[in-house]
View 1 (tube, rainbow, N blue to C red):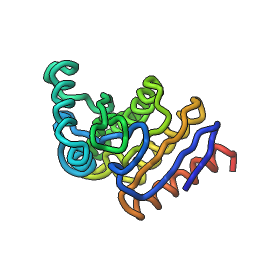
View 2 (view 1 turned 45 degrees about the vertical axis):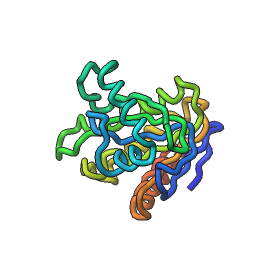
View 3 (view 1 turned 90 degrees about the vertical axis):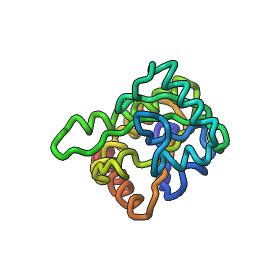
View 4 (view 1 turned 135 degrees about the vertical axis):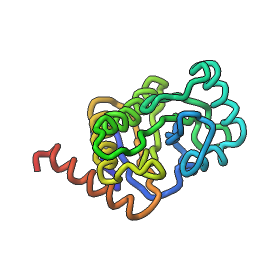
Length: 188
């Protein structure tokens, strides 16, 4: 699904985030930045060992040994990935009834987009952040992601934002959320 808004393009697709030829891809990282499972592990494997070394440098020099806080972002080169850069963000772990998680998930998308804009990038690809092992309900995550991305693209000349989803079922969930939000925006 392709949506044009304010001279920008939002693309929903099923695919592999590590194959995206965008300026940046977003890594749904854990706070250690040292790789892990799911999207994080796949990105680290495809980018090569230089990505782990770059993440260790950030952990040491920027974070002073601490973990990257949930909702925050850092950027590294893409190394062996087709994307030039990887923006690492830590999504919230789902805890039923804790509504701060919605704000933190929104921050993952917002901070990634703002960092890409600040760096002069004009294309970015996101996975569905926190909906794997962190168990964030995908319908809720899709709503937050789509609203945040639409608000950003409405407010900024940017380029292309891709939402690269793991399965057809995830795609359908995001497409439903996007269609509803666009209908609300158009007054329909």
